[in-house]
Amino acid sequence: MHIAILSNNPRSDSCARLKAACQVRGHKVRTLDPLHFAIFIDETGPGLLYKNKALGPLDAAIPRIGAQITFYGTAVVRQLERMGVLCLNPSRAIASSRDKLRALQILSRHAIPVPPTAIVKSSDAVLPAIEQLGGAPVVVKLIEGTQGVGVMLAESLRAARAILETLESAHQNVLIQRFISESAGTDIRAFVVGGRVVAAMRRVAGADEFRSNFHRGASVEPVQLCAEHEALAVRAAGVLGLRVAGVDLVESTQGPLVLEVNSSPGLVGIEGATGIDVGQAIVEQLEQTMDVPDIDILRQIVLQDGFGIVEIRIHEGSALNGVHLQDSVFGSLDVKVLSIQRERMRLTQPAPATELAAGDLLTCYGAAEDLQRLVQEHGRQRVVSPACARRRPPGRRRAAPGGGRAP
Image (cartoon, rainbow, N blue to C red; front, side, top):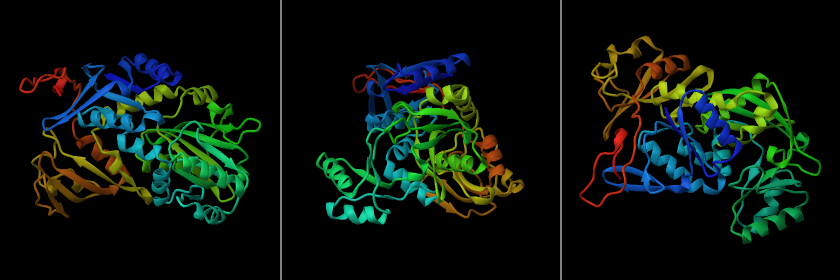
């Protein structure tokens, strides 16, 4: 495969590890800075240039979008998705996880335990909000931040108010979160890849520091997660739509809480602590995702008791194309087709005699094992190796090599 690692810090150790893992498995890999892309949009479809040149063949991308370039970086990922490039973490999932408020709203909506949190805009609401959270000390967090940047501990109401007023004057949106004192500056980073925890480590904050980030000098050690912690980490990554995620868990008197979910987790700390080749696990997941038909993971909802909902689009060469619903594989699976989206028409609870057609988008509910079998056997084939030719004057468009188009 032709793979791109998307990062505005191409010389980072994590990028180097991923690049080496790709090369070991025989892939052609480049590290591309999202800020060097030019995005083109018109009625003929999406286009991209990189450093003012054609992008060239590209099958898949591993996004590592830094917090400081979230807006433009996710726009590039979204453009690549429209061009048929498999992005290991989808653009919407990256954006949702990067916005701490949005991520907490999604997690709590799926009954995933998180630290009690508040966000306020009026200075008059600060003290009541802190009291509602149980009083000082509280943690104040910027809505967008990573590696512990923008995370402050306010040990008193006065300190909290001063911090919030300062950040408000700088037009920063912040969260107020209950300080989980019983964790004592310790948390667990679970590295989730493809719906399973491939490695986990315990992080302990250094002296005079409450943030347990590896980049803040925290000490790390490998840890074997219990079933409850592992299931919680996998669910947190899944509901945010992330195939690769660093899920931070913290212990409380009420049990484990999800502190944060990172869409671009570092590899150096976790690999050093556990001795596990996480980079290889990521590349293997990319290969498996390319082999498995394209399912929009943002619309894959894992429910309780082993059931779920997925969307699947029928392609021209699918065995489902031209088959009546009653004669299809659904009859032998514990799966029900809830609706069919066909161009601008939606068929709800389609009749058994409904004939399936290429382009149909099926919303399916059923047992998780049967859904997995379904998507493996009947998903949409992916367009591979799109490229983008150099921008040309109007009226002189030409096809780009590898299945793409000139923007």
